[in-house]
Image (cartoon, rainbow, N blue to C red):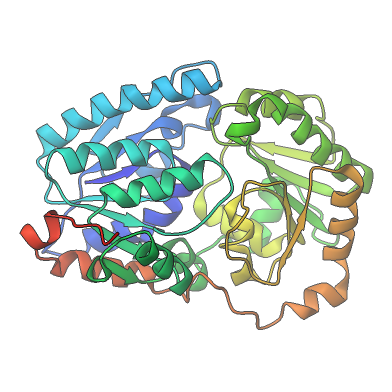
Length: 375
């Protein structure tokens, strides 16, 4: 049973689902929830039909409001629904990815219902509620897929048994590293870009602990980029607490320099990253996927604090002048040249195959199910 509630998670899982479907010894029961089912966030549930991926369960969970209260209550709704999905679907294992609340609810339900939980991108650090969620999932997970040695060592220090941990890389890189992204001409046409000019890709989410300042944080970034007068493609944030404030700030900056997208298909997103001159905001894409494109990333604020980063990342606070200066630095030919041949600390493009092989060979017994923390 595979759980996904956001477009980011689908990037983790897309190739894995395809590999599972190509095998006779595995099958998936896909649970689609949260942002995928919301029209205001682009109804990314449609991507599964376009990719010919079968959905087993559509579970609505998101309460309106875009507040910490509605966010927390939405997770309670999903825990109830996920419990029913597990009861009715009777999966052998539950596969989760990332650090969002619905993944934690699925881990809690699976562990309490004696179904082993496998977790992709386990052990990493980040600077907001997502980081806390990721490590809470680890306590309920029976198998950890870590992207790198740093994440593996953190899992061991947190008390996880070493036999449960597999260093495989980050699966969201796999399709991009094999060239599965839209060609430049399609990207230029889709976003109405001038290929002769620099392009900024902007993805900025609200930070749950700073939800009340999300509008001003977004406005600071938009003012910095508006002053540069460069064509910019903005993709809507996740539906975390404060996201409505982010969207309201975006609406105030609409203009010919800014292309606003609710959701972008995975292949098109990869093509956009390949074409872009710099990615700006606080998305994990700047740290995880951007290095594979040798793409400079201006990382704004604390959302990715503590996360391993490559030399493509320039960290700045929510400050208009600092953001503008960082973008100018990223656009300098010397900076882009300095990224040539850089190694992505999150893997080499073979994570999905490794994950699927490990799942297929997993022995589900008391050794796997009965966890003992080492501290």
